[in-house]
Structure formats: C-alpha cells, structure tokens
Image (cartoon, rainbow, N blue to C red; front, top):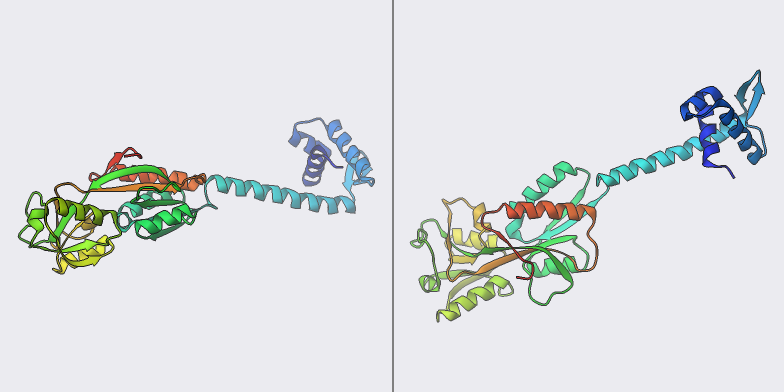
Length: 305
C-alpha cells in the first residue's frame, strides 16, 4: 500500500521534473527522495521511471499515476477550501421567525449588520404571531424566534428577554393625543381597536379595564399591531399595543401615549429546548441581542422574570 510520504515524493518529482528539485521543495536530501521512489516502485510492482545518466525519466505508467494523484490532491484542496468556507459560514443557513413589532426596524437592522460580516449565509425570515413562532421553534422549523411566550412551554429555551410597556395609539388630532398618560377611565367612552383575544396583550387590557370597573367599547378586533395602527390612522378607534409598531408611522398621523396602570409587553429570543444552535444562529443571536439592548424602550430582564 502506498504511503503518504511516497505519494508526496512522487508528486513533487513529477511536478518539478527532478529528484533534486523535489528534495529541495520537501526540505530533505536527494538520496532520501530516491529511496522513497524506489520503495514506491517496489510496493507497486512496476517501474515508474527509467534511470539514465543519473536522471529519472517518467514512464507512461508514471504519467497515468500522476494524473490520478493530482485528482486526489485536487479533491483534498477542494475539501480544504470547503472547510475554510464553512468556517466563514458561506454554506450556512439561518431561519428566524419573529413578531411583526420587531420585523420593521429591529430585525432588518440586526440582519443588515450580521450579513455585512457573513455574506454567504442564506437567511429565511418569516413573520408570524407568537403561538405560531413558538411552535415553529419547538418543531425545529426556525432556528430562532422572537415572540411573547405563554406559561408552561418547556419545549423552547429563552436565550434573552426584554420588557417594554404598551402605549395608547391615537390619531394625531385626537383630543387625548397630548396627554402625558392615559388609563381605562380616560378611554371609557372611546371606541377601541383591540388585538386578538388570543394575544397576551389582550388579556392584560381586559384585566386592567376590569380592575377599573369599566367595560371597554370594542369597535374592532384586529391582528397584528400594524393593522391596528392603520385602523387608528383612519379614525376607526384607538388602540393599546406595543411601543415599537407606532414608530413606523409619522407623528403627523399617529401619536403614542403611555398607558397606566402599566401593561408589560415582554418579548423573548427563543431557541429549541434540546437542540444545539448552529454557529450562524449563535452569531445572529448575539447581534440581535446587541440590537435590542440598544433600544431605549426595551430593557433586558432575567429570563425567568
């Protein structure tokens, strides 16, 4: 069986044309190369070179073998190149699923920064509601998710969590638009555009109005939050939603006022509970965390909070 040492010596002799050049390239003595070539011929059972006047002349068999050796080294070189590309994440994929509230500015900002350093990654970004996002992460259909998380889900892992607080969104010319804060009693006569009853926010809104002894005037139930904002702009009512979505609308159309008593809007960066993150997912997770941490209206909280 041919050894790596024999193949390397043979390749250098064939490529460089002499034992002397091969010995110099491999930093060994000329007799050592000659000895290795002789051992190779003995192992193969046929000559590779004709020896004339102290020189080696390749036989036809040598040329055939050299072609096969070069194909082998090409394969090794290609494998090495592929491994280097993998190190640079050029063959990686990343699938993320996020709430609409972070899909307008936060995720695009994070992805833009991330892809400037990792151009070869193929990214899939889908926008869903929280239950769908959590299910996708738990099923391995998304590497990372950004969503609200209902109690009792143990099939996903919270990598990081942030707390924001809901705001009241009103048309810019609304009589309450310039108030410093608004509560249930201020909104008791106003038609409301509420989020879907399946959302965490809708539960909080119902609870806050119940505590105040007020029955909200629900005009429309809408989902997601940017749809609610669009309805508010058109005068269909006012809404209580996350603080990020109203920011995509100009202040000439929409105003945001803090709601009291405060309604938390917690979002979590989620991963599968048992599967290890890919390197691309790990790196994007760090970029997303840094981007979220830079948002003034969001504060990092302990995952168990």
